[in-house]
Length: 242
Image (cartoon, rainbow, N blue to C red; front, side, top):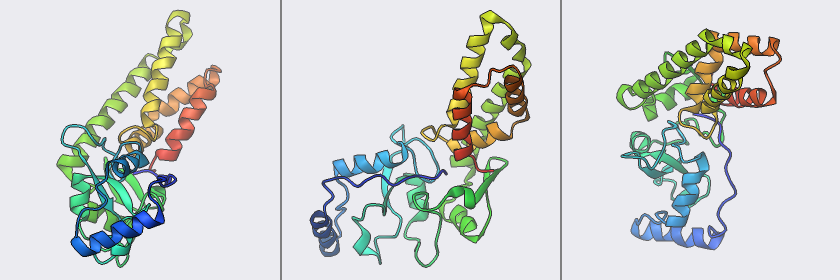
């Protein structure tokens, strides 16, 4: 989970439109938010990822659901409120269900900074406080099959690649190999960009990896740690849960 910024609401989502659809929901119970342009706007709020688990939405069985952060009942006034409609995977939405986020708050990545609540330990979310603990439990963020096993596979790939880059760090001394080596290393660091899947996990793994720390030091010593590397690291720091 990473900190997300709430975009400006769609022009079509006027106060009059919201009021009419809210009343329709109260009268009929219809899924009044199931509107293509609104679904697209919500989908783009978190770069096409579930705002909680960071899995890519729209792939295979990972369909996006319009999640109401404050549940539709009893908070029907907010069923069409911009900022209460969040992009979530079917798994996270089902787990959260009708949990009352007013009476028992959980982390909202559009309001809260996940850094203040979580850190990663053994590819699992670990809580820093009671709200974080509740969030993990409500969303089942440490479900082994859905979340922990994929994180484990991704993390191991990153760790192995960093080990490989460290073992071949002599390539930076070779004029023919240097540019390709640096380009591939930058590409790896780019996997921790906030737009990528599991960016919090990837960033955390990279920044805490001893091989990356050694590579950064070496590249700085060789005057090869350029502005692009520094920009990539700033993004990693933004996303990481340490």
